[in-house]
Length: 112
Length: 118
Image 1: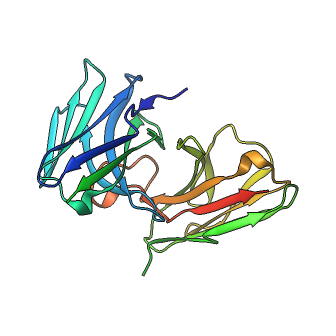
Image 2: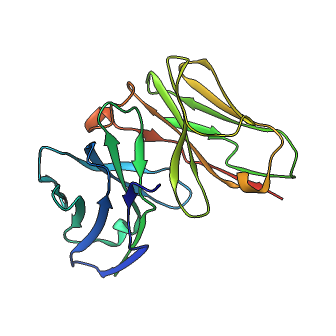
Image 3: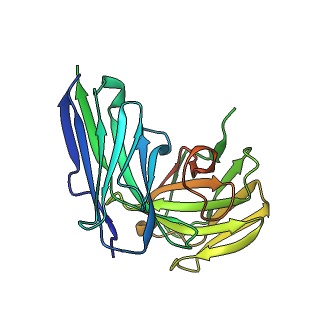
């Protein structure tokens, strides 16, 4: 049962434009959401997170938006750079749980 | 100096063999994890140890046995390998169980070990 879903396997964006990656979840017990970035032959690395009590968190070019009523979050990258080309995983933590639930990832390609 | 290191990076073996993947972290974290990423790209928790004690054991066949000799090491041994075990296995660590929020408390992954069973 996949509780975290990333329905777009890939996304291509022109350099300098905005990249928007989407994630949907089904479990209302999730209290923390994270985005991880993965380059080929490397492990996922933490990018940005948001608590369920907030609706926005910003860190430089990266902003995560959370819409709890829609059970939806998105990652905005502005402006997109070629070095942002990677697979982005959405992840969520259930209240009191000791692990993360991951989506299947979206491959972002930023075209120079 | 790699924070979470796994060996081997690649492993190709025949069905029925037994193999091990080793993981070490030098972050001083108390908690370590094994995740499996299958062909459909699902990244799913298998096991977690906190200070050498097993705290998460998902529905994983008995052929998979984790071992944590100390809190800096978590190894994964797989007996009687099957075709369906082919996947990328990621080791990870965190300061404490469930602390994944931000900054220094994130879940840190190794580079992965790609297992191919023929």
